[in-house]
Length: 231
Image (tube, rainbow, N blue to C red; front, side, top):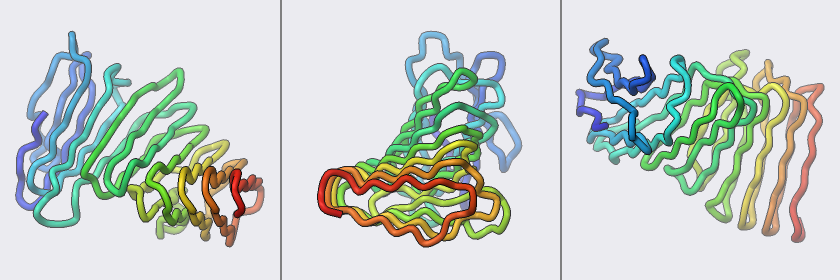
């Protein structure tokens, strides 16, 4: 699927309708095309030269095939964005390969979906999940978990010097951060006032890591592990 170049930026929605994958131009309020998924092994969405926002909407259910969104290094800001809406699942995992590439795996009985992306700026994950897992693969990096800046909206942000920035709806049960390889710094700053999941799990994994926990809402149990080396 090739997204058309719009001036100055485009906003598009990918969704299922009667078993077909449809792409909608949200600015023009029109369906651009609809594709049968019969015999299809994956969906690839290519961004235009302008900033594109792609919303993957699960209102019609899962797509049953992997989705890949390739940003196209837009010539003007703010960059390409991925938005996930209208779905719920047991576990949602984010894996960060570098500052603009990664993958999202949605795992559960109600919804299962694999999404990969490259060349993006922010990701907005507005899906409901019991558990959220963030795993960083870039190497030595600084990872920050904090409020998104909007008071009382139940959203937080996780960001890294070597990973994509993700704004996400808080999970119900647990949030896990795996810092991965390298000598990492993980900081837990003030979180949104509605943050109420049961468990925060932070693992430094390999390397000489440092974990800084500045503030945590009451009722959340924190499990902090530096990993196998001196931390």
